[in-house]
Length: 200
Picture (cartoon, rainbow, N blue to C red):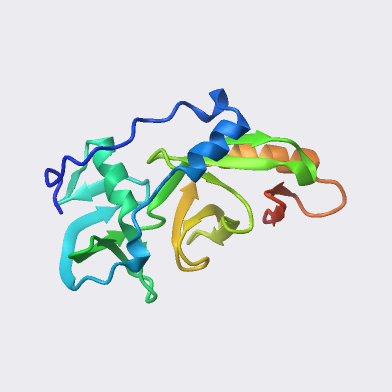
């Protein structure tokens, strides 16, 4: 699996979330049609010589992958193993990939409704759309300095699947909405019928 190894068709980039209705967002999320990587059981073939940096940049052989379409393609065959390792999987091979933090990044958010009726839709840097809810929860984990960092579960097993780090500007939007709605309880946001508390 190298940068020039495939010319597989990639779906065109989506418009910005702000210009999409909630129905369009939901349809785009439902149409993601990812490969069934959880069903594939190929032999382990070593390391891909690829890594994903903390800022979400994908590298191959120490060089950033400059083609967004190629990054999107690789992101669709990314899987997390039960032991926590990340791998790129096809029906015929499985290769390790180093991930410094979360493999994906949430770079845009759209909110509709308020309170318990709110829906939060996130756009990833790979153009995938994920709607937060019970199957795709928001969680927080501390950075080495103790600062809480927000993550969105994207796919796989909750707690050991593929996550997206929520970019700082997006988190600031979420925090503003949470603080505006906070009453007597802790700040947080509803989405898809689930409440996600923010760290105090």
